[in-house]
Length: 382
Image (cartoon, rainbow, N blue to C red; front, side, top):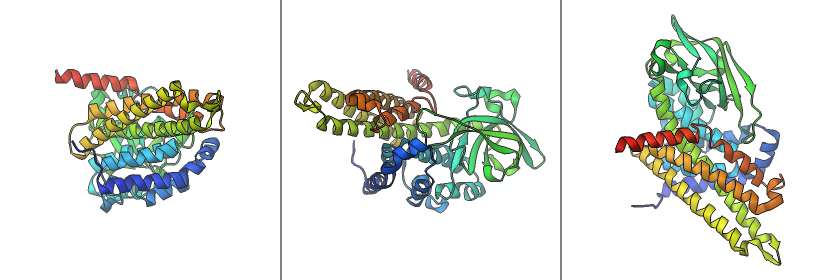
């Protein structure tokens, strides 16, 4: 086995780390405080090809592999989890399905703007009554001549308030259950009948907008169907597998930031006449954090490598997302404990890391669903 990164992968990791340290980290606390969408940072990430890192250059992307994507996303998320999830959604949930299932015309029209960083994408799946169970989806798309008429409300959509384009899941045949779900690409800025609904007030990732997408007799061209009618559920599962690799990377980034801050604080904070890093109780917390984060990163890189090599990765992506998000949340709790009272105050980033970490256990498949996916796969192997 070879754990050595290629020269290109090293360059991507170093570039993302340098950019995150210089451009994102200094403003992360302010972005969290003001809930401001990081528009300028997104533009810069686009210029660095981070918003379409795995998409071929002919469609405006970076033409790199998924291992590079994971490495870069860890560094961005380490500086700011909100910027990390914006990058993740554009890459994993929007670019991927358009590239994988779209026609050449759809790729040129809808993929290139987002992969190049000129526009933002989002993924319209979740509804108030349909999260882990998409069969309860109520958003419908009815063909009327050369147009699809869409009605429904999508909930908790990352980038929903700022996105230019959306990959949207809707029911096209109510009688067929899962097999009656189809996917569409929607130009949100130029679709009458579409509006942005409630913008959520959240515990964490506050610089990343989470909004309702409201469709009221919204009409889109017939050719905006992604793939064939009824293929939406299958497309959705494949898309979410890749998205879980992205969320694993985001969680690892948050965990890395937590560990670094805990180490730095423990070296300078003195109690009983010596740095608290000299106490075994603190050392063991730091050791466990470092070990679990390394394990989480290896799981994420394995899943990315499998995707790069055209191998099945459903189970591995679920494992990576499950373990990385649980580790990030646990590490953040330990980090707050190490900082004591300061960890509970906004004077230090630690409390932000703790708030940001929680969502990684929930979105793109709750960790309860991840365990179901893993169990289904391992039982199938026996």
